[in-house]
Image (cartoon, rainbow, N blue to C red; front, side):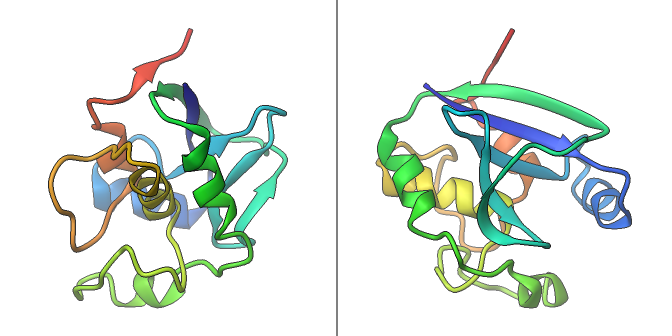
Amino acid sequence: MITLQFSTTKGIGSQVIRWATWSPYSHVDLVLADGRLLGATARYGVSIRNPEPTLACAQFQVPGSVEAIEAARSQIGRPYDWAGILGWGFRRNWQEQDAWFCSELIAWAFEQAGCPLLRGDRSHRITPRDLLLSPMLVPTG
């Protein structure tokens, strides 16, 4: 099982994401065995970071394999998808590996491992809320 951490902060960007997607969370990361987080952030792009304070946080277990983590690791150093923010209403293949939103990186990594979190073909955008609604998630604790 792999742990996903959904979170939100006080920042205006977090508030806008939650409002626009009708979600209690604005961000999602993979939780590594050592407790650090692997994901895409506006500040660092795709990176491994220490956990930071959040307003709200929830963790879920997801059936998956180490291949999902390795797929996400292969994207370390890629930038955050700022162009995607500016063009939110435009169609873009979310699986392009040039830049990532947090939720798209996670969804892509699980697809690469043969363990998709979402059903069907998603060709537009994937938000933290989309992943939160995945039937694959199992709440922890």
